[in-house]
Image (cartoon, rainbow over all chains, first blue to last red; front, side, top):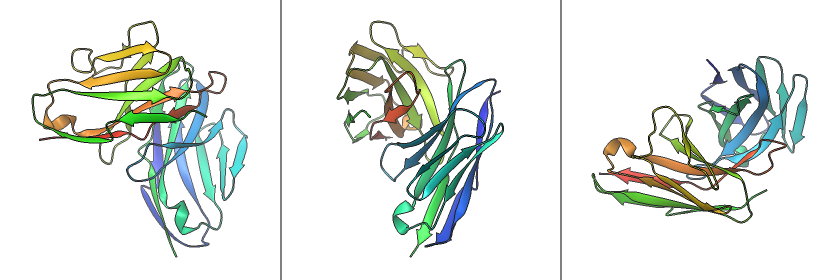
Length: 109
Length: 115
């Protein structure tokens, strides 16, 4: 069965303390892996799409990488405004989407 | 990317009543999706709504409980029927902006509380 597991569930970082969030997945055939940011009371905001192992994408302090079994979202020198829940999702070749439960990130000034 | 709005943003409803949630997109899109997000849980797809055809429901969701309309390429509604407290959740619509890239963009959500 296709599924997505994110870890850790929650992460507290000091401002400037770099870290990584993990998204492990099993999927019958990967069409895409997606990262979203979700602020409280709002809908998910699209960040990245990764399509194949070895692919990397960057946006400001965020960098997403992909292997055949997992994806990492690296956060470099985070700021308090990076505090949010980060969601990972995969789409299989049957066009079905599976979302993880997210990692709640808190960046302390 | 698409700009998506939802109405209402939140509501408190009585058990046994129904609520219709509207989703408006600023551009024409083929595929629209309705999700439910319960506290501390992942997003769960309720159904896919393509213009001109019946909505396709995921396992565990039925049309009688969650009827969906898709009258044109920029608008859709989801009705939560005969509500119970277990229906309290955030309901989100999303669109597939460009089928080449499979990216979904989400509306702000509707927070529903059923008493």
